[in-house]
Length: 142
Image (cartoon, rainbow, N blue to C red; front, side, top):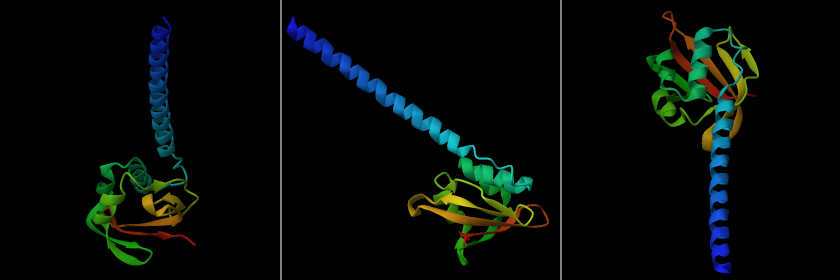
């Protein structure tokens, strides 16, 4: 009888432990989704706002806001746009938008840069006559 009680106790505790793990995973998912829903109301340029939302969501539509081969700089150094965002999209995002300038084409805020950490960063979008971005300058804001 004690043996049966011990078996029931072990099975009960195992089931409880499994349930707790799933709850933590569920909570982590909710937290991640909430972090992506950042207030973009400071951004008045609709194209910039939509592009930033795509970046926040890690959505491939991010690329549709740019010309085929946009110029990109990171702290003043020319880099390949597509190569950079093939690694960053879905992993890097703004944590806050603190300042917006230049008709909402210059965005400043805290940015989570994956393995590099979190930085106060700027994104400066340059729009061509067709309404697409042909240049993006990013870097650490002073």
